[in-house]
Image (tube, rainbow, N blue to C red; front, side, top):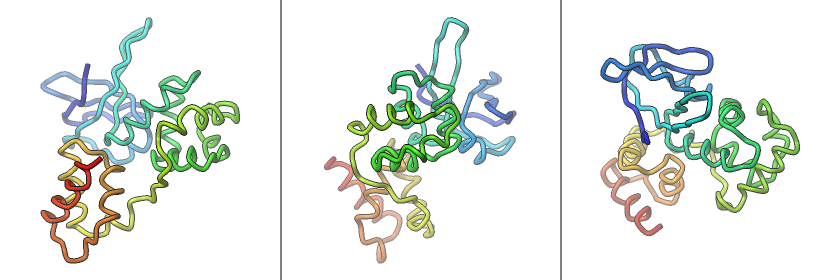
Length: 193
């Protein structure tokens, strides 16, 4: 129903934020990872998961599409609802979850609230085939350069996830390329997928 909501951050609580869009305050439940990047009164885009239940309508949102994608994947696991998925994303980054699944690292997944050994085993079993087997290294090393950062944000505005973009940029020799050239080379590789 909603892809994203862009608005002014007017409230930051422990488990949710309030985003003002044209005079409507949206209560959006989000992860601690997303909350930690937000500041009051700034304009931000939150990527949304709409959840209609018997007891009400709930919006879950994240500052990155990658985090929303991992949230959606976690919801596919039997006996995992939005609360546990949100707790998992508050404890671990999408890359950490992905790498834990690939490596069958139950202990890392058990760090999340509400995730015991059985649930962690289900996460690994039910999601391993869905996420592929390419281990993602955190983006810190490639984001030290402004031109690469600008290229990542430019490509994300075209709808690609940070994970997809980072994987492609790691395969390109960016040493003698400016932002525009990095985007061009990345698009060549992304379009072949």
